[in-house]
Image (cartoon, rainbow, N blue to C red):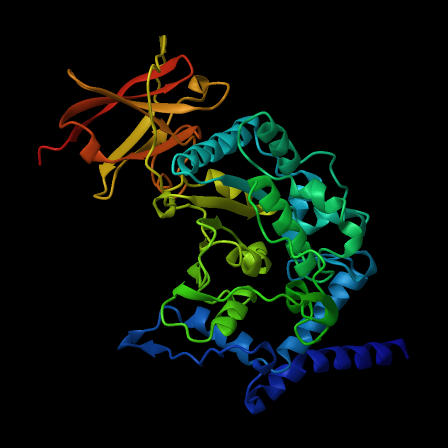
Length: 487
């Protein structure tokens, strides 16, 4: 009897597994539920030769055209996350149906702790951005956005232990010791958490969380702004969370969202050009389609503030868009890890919004900015080391110098200076204390203590210069010679 039971069980199991394959020839469109363009069946021969990408393209076609794919993923993820209590589809199922993004776990448990050098380097980088903005009459604000489980950590599964401190909390401490203008949204939002400021099944805050955060940002910018106090709203139950889509693609669940009754000032899109339906375009940028939203600019019809905005943002910035647009004459929004400071013109405020889990991106590439000149920077000790490494090139738009220095050279405050010296002239620039990850990936560097800078060669007198790096009382000695002008 037991043998018969096993045979029946095995037959049912393999029958269920084989069902999608049997249906494959009859499947017209298995990707309709996911609303995406399906991959086409690849050819073994492509452009007259063997298609080297056939296996990869076939896998894409098979995955897209597998019947009941969404239903199978939904069922598998349900079993994996609810029965076996393990992350599925990069999503963690918490208590009371709360969903969390798996990539936020290292921050939650502090398993990705940055070094003191890294945190101080972030603060120095931000201070240089702020100096640049303020020199043009604008104001600067750094606004790190907390992960959802930093606010609603009590809904995480019990086997994830929340750390007392993590990168964000430690960064706040260093920012507090600096002159960098920042806003502690974590502390602010924790005090508002009873108001449902994050979605239960989405990574992001609700519109209410965004409105509250917008006001807190503008308060820290010390700018007069519309508060939208007393605005009427309704709570809907039709928001489809991004985490829910990942976990249960075939199950069309929804959660609450706040819809405000606000009469925003009329505006138009400067970039992209030719937009006729402003509302539809804004709705698109506020959605999770991420369709052409890396760079766009708006202009209010009644320009009466005399102020402009340059905002570096990520997906959390979507819900902030209407409030920011409504409070500046022009507003430019970019999604980047390399702020372009040439876009910050006179009387332009800069807001740098970045979600907690991506703070490490601030260390990967230096902003696009001409380095400020300094004076009276001297070193009493020369550290000659094979870890002192430099690359230099005239890029046309600027002269770029970057590289690494011996870790023993790095000063307590991590500030780094690049010195150009000839027989008749001397120039000292402050560099970003950033290791250029992408630019140095193929170089044989022996240190992760990096620096990066740019300067306008037209502002430097022609000649041959010996280049060295200074940090604290330490100098690298001459690393390279460069020639400016004379081409």
